[in-house]
Image (tube, rainbow, N blue to C red; front, side):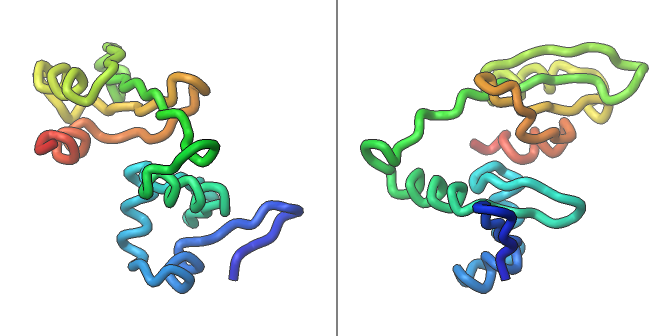
Length: 137
């Protein structure tokens, strides 16, 4: 059952699974990948009605007011501990992959995916996972 906080309605992965008939694993993957916008509160993901509408508007191509401007993203390759203080900003996935491949020890790096307009961190991904996710695209 969705949670109501004032005028805000939050849907958990379980709620979306029941309402939409999409597997919980698929929903979590969409949330991790940023295809469906949500927030993690504790160990539970929550999605607003607006995020669900935006997802379907983007999937259908949207039109007029429904179509949002494309989110601008930057990728920040950074060291994960005090041994590596290197940080490099990249504007594309291919540029980020190139930067990661030039590193001697990939396990010492992570990629911070950030919305350039709001400065909000969308996701932080281990370098190996980033390479695995995007190298076949």
